[in-house]
Image (cartoon, one colour):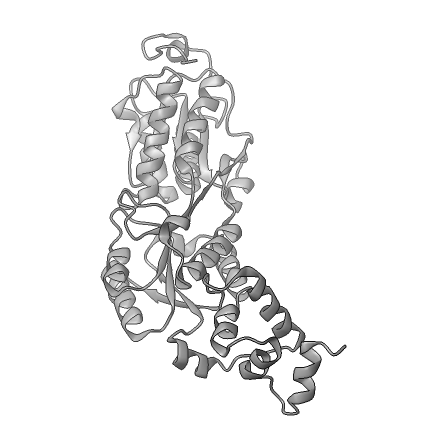
Length: 368
């Protein structure tokens, strides 16, 4: 018996198999074949498998320009980076971009990357790209509080997926790592080591991650029966120099902490410098724990205890979710979160003996 693919190859002696050829051979309409190839959810999974199997056997390649004209799609996912943001210089950005590209290519999409120097230019860039149809949808890294990028894209009716959550979820799809759980577990880890006076250095408060990580820190303190000292709380520290200044203010306090939780690795590495300036030793005198899982954290002396994020996986998931959103899936089905991975290294240790740790003035008792 002659299979459908063989029939198509015999019928078409030219260099290229068309959708019409496949539709005739499969007994389907051209519209059904086209929608199956593009993953539309109104086409049964079995039909999609049949069509995609034949396309693979015949090495079917759509004409990108014609397809874009017909469907209004570019088969491209957009990403706009703000160069002034600290993320633009992080070493794991390469992993994130690799994940985005891998996830996109699995579905025959590409990634279009643009950049902006300032926040105002960033918003203008999104508005321009959306209006000009340069991408089918956008990935929004590092979700902001009441994210203005999301507002622009919602107004333009352009699909998007946030890397991070929103307090108002209306119209928003996202992928996120539960930083609040990590901060909660960080405090519990330190409390189990006997620490009672713990400081917290948070990241930039314009981002939702900072709100969530603060909530996690406070929950961990409450779980552990510890009293939060406002003098041991700082915001907006994402660089080493900012972390060093923040940690230094803690260490110069009349009752310094025996441990510091940092929302980002860079701030924690800055705290290393603050301890060194005062002749103190990481882990022995003050334990430090952070979040990100950067290479610098692993290579620090001593290596930093942290919660690691799989940036490549995040990129892959964001691409997948955005493509599904472009194809019409409702945002309520496109919200995923995952846990960070705890990496216990040498920057945390038992609380040192002394007045702070022996005192019960800031210890309410661990909750069951």
